[in-house]
Image (tube, rainbow, N blue to C red; front, side, top):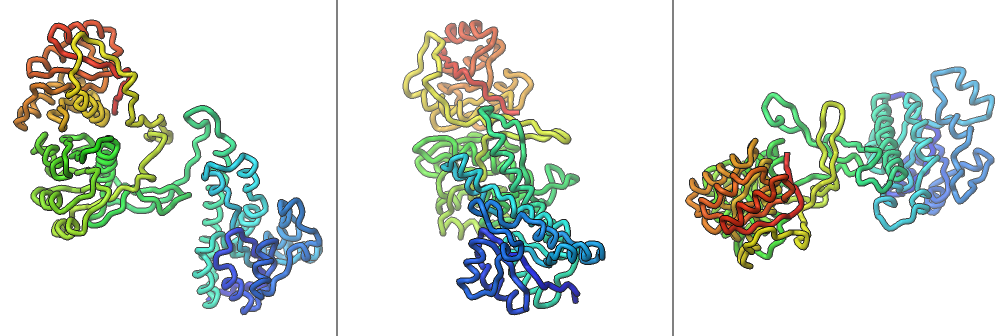
Length: 515
């Protein structure tokens, strides 16, 4: 049983959720309550006995409430160490009152800032001054003061209060919450004042909290965890409907599946099979099942034990087909009731719905030691008006969908990357090779192993061709056209090779390396 005795409390809150029953409980226990402005009025309306802080200080609220608690009589009462006789003597000398409880939540700066439709003046007005000061003072003095910074803490506090369990460990935990909250608050404010026209911020301030420990990282000897933004601790990249815990590798692969399947703008259903973040098969179809079968056809071996991403709801037909093979995860915008019943037979299969708001970012971030490498995210949309036809041969209209498809897919393949494709999906994928011609050789081999005809396909490359060797090899297997960024010192040589063989070639003038 704790001996901590609460005689006096300050309550000054912007968010007044559940403050009335909370204050009512304090009143019933004989706690003397002091308050300000809107909180004072709210408690009075509900017949809670409360005293104005300005009556305690003898100093009125001024400047529209900007100055109300910033007074020595308030802060001496919060900061006084009850175990220090000198502090108690100082309180008596200035006729100050000690507080044992501070209940404060802050002006909604973050909400005002992030809505995007408020002026700088309106945003700045939501910078709380007295609130953080009182919270930090009470948290510093946690051995003598309990501090509550959020309505979600009220229920546990009341239970402990009534049970006499406001012990030091609990007060210390409340103090930690204060410094986490004020740190996030200050981070948002600093970000607001640091905004400039530079696409990469001059100040990188982010706070994250662990939301889940994962079984392990990429390998069993590596620990791993999922962290969410401190400002949005419930954020999750995926909503899981069934299956085993999502592993570190699952998260990485499922994010890749989401980006490939959901970013491709097409009236048809889109399906991608992912293995080690690379698309081993990609297909379009009138139905999700058609798209899935086309994707599987492109590489009927590698997709085993992989990730399926589809941009349409999973229906009964697709669910039945998916049960015929071992898959780790299915990422889709929705699952029909029939599909869920069928897939429930695969108890370990993870069914995931992407939370798109949490998967989009302006930046790509990688860590190195104690620092970060940050770049702008390269978004999938392309301005096709900037594409340039550089060969004598021009593609028939029937090839433009294949060009778009191949160009979309090659962006998501590890460099050096080559994709062979037609208008219905991938035919062969060559990923992560040190030379571009080797990537092409792998794509050709994969197409042959899958029994797919390369004839009349297009070839997409994530960067320029340094030599004509890839063109000469591709034409041997029936490739009819090429889409690539261009920009090599040997572009002329590569263009001449295409003209010799009667191939068409487009320059996108945009490199899409993926490391």
